[in-house]
Image (cartoon, helix red, strand yellow):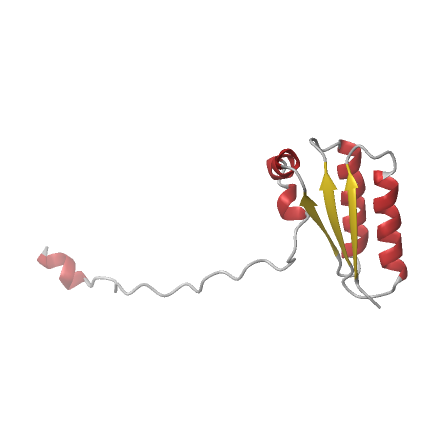
Length: 118
């Protein structure tokens, strides 16, 4: 069974929150590991009730290794997500990027004799 579900909505839709809740319920009913809700959102603002619904859905999906990815369809919505740091919360991939390996310093500590010469 498919572990992802795509949904497109606008922030001003009266049933936007209910549609997100139903999508999360549907994904959880599939009994798959790591379900993903891929959400394309249109609008010019980010209503707090919608954010609350997204956070609640994300928590529920994370219990089974899942996630919600939000794709803002307008610059205003993209900026609103970034302003609140939600562009990183509702993004895929879930794994943090690997950090570059730290190389030991090529410099060696100076010996006491080296300090004495200077």
